[in-house]
Length: 463
Image (cartoon, rainbow, N blue to C red; front, side, top):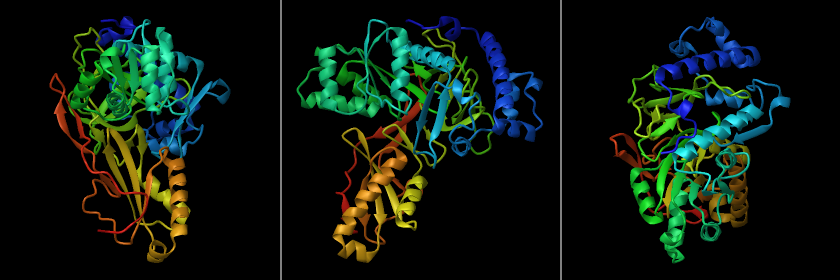
């Protein structure tokens, strides 16, 4: 089994601890000198980076929250002058202001190396043709995978998102051997191939590297049987770097976390206390090689566990279990993080007051669907059809601009929205989740795509 950087991915835990400590000291000194936010945080607890003597002392430092990044929009958390930033990415939806992340030239070199690691772990070599169906642009997914694949020497097909018939045609004609996609979109491709009468055995596909949303062992089995691939899990988030934070090897027993670049902790989300290996809690990440946008003890909001035992592949890096959900109200829809209250803010901006609303999340034919129900006044609901259509169009556009995906908008009669079935306030998530073990006994989130579709756009009467 190939390993991209065995000198780091297979080092002893003692050697790794020394590397982490040296890089952590450098990072803490950098943020103390160059980032006012961290200087203020450290001064508040009388901490000076030079006083740190052991990695365990990291636990005494305050957390960084997603709201802190939003409040620093756009560049206040950058640790280098803007002239040294050669790439900027951002994501929208989880906060009122976008998350803005900068990269120096060295950051991009490190990023490419780390993505090369996870792609290699997933089976990709210089002989492969890798089709990237993630979004290219300000989001990190497409370009992050792209440069890592080029670093390996693989041939890259930057097909980006959508146009599934074209994706399948390219797979056939260009002899794609590795597919990068969200898990749900990989299954959509499988569905489309069946509809087109294409036997997947006639394709060159060997590997599927999947990321961006929760998925399950049941989905993996389905995908591997229908596409004849080896499917592996991957984890990344824009605030930390993008793809390349961790990735599963062909043993399929958890995602190897690149600990020489990131220090990971799992804490009790309520108390902030560190949990023992194997316990499920909130994942906390400290970057220790990022130059432009270093983060100290960042609360990812993702729930998982860590396993420090060596893997059969030879890597000694800790392995992340599947992400089991969120510690906050964030919804992950089509790989995009959405805070329900952000939708309420947008509706209030358009209408001048905050209406009663509800987010309905469903899965139809392996794809997530978001519907926003908005209660409107009786006179508008019953009498003003032209105004209804104009309002639906306006709300759809504004919400799409604000959260990064286009929802279906439904105007409903006052008193229609029912709260008793909501999974969280303002949200009715009809995607079913449960737990299912990893092959090695770990656990993961299980989604069931079988539930009814929502209604048509426009005014809806209560039933």
